Image (cartoon, rainbow, N blue to C red; front, side, top):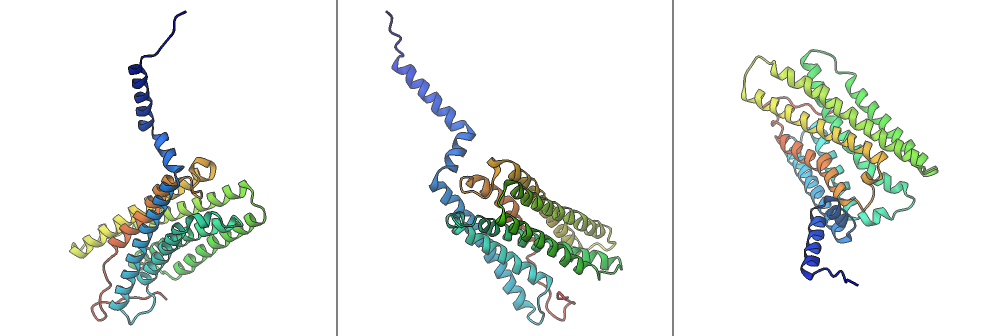
Length: 297
């Protein structure tokens, strides 16, 4: 009888080949990181640090604006920076205590802690759309009386619907309602993206047609163009990701064993957009007496 013995050199080559395939296979290292408590901690604490930095920048800018124009109340610019500070600070705390958040009962509390900052993020950037809409209509000598009531109404409707969904989920936590809640927020995100495209695009085209060529006009044109593009893409990506999140368990963002997906998602839909917009809108308002500065009424 013949013994089929594999030479040691061949066995070693096979082992090396298998190891090489495992190293180059994206699903293998992705799964290894997702399942590692050490990597989970590293990624979630990194997100917490990034959110903390953005929150600190927004707060510093808010203080600088207040010191520059202390005689005015809560202007659009101040409210925008305050909401940015608030959203990013809450996100920072959620990721610092992410393991504790995942253990909270009833489960609806977890959804609320993760969804409330997203709703506040929507309100923050909807405020920017409102500001641009006011500028656009004022420049065209069109009444802006209905803009703020519309802004408040839209936000109230969004929050009321979301609260109703939370209460129903608390009463009867079924998968269909979870999907409905995620799809609702996907729709809200798409609505915000279209708002930026509509009013940011209109304001950009209006500034392009402005007859006077000046450095200030060029800077404002770049500012509107950059912010419109960033925010449109941010909310569009959020919409697409929420759709995947609703129907694919592998794309679930509310669990600890998807840290890489969480990192990519929050980096591209909140951290980077917030950082870039805060940088682009870093200019302080003019001092009193140089030009007129309108607070929120």
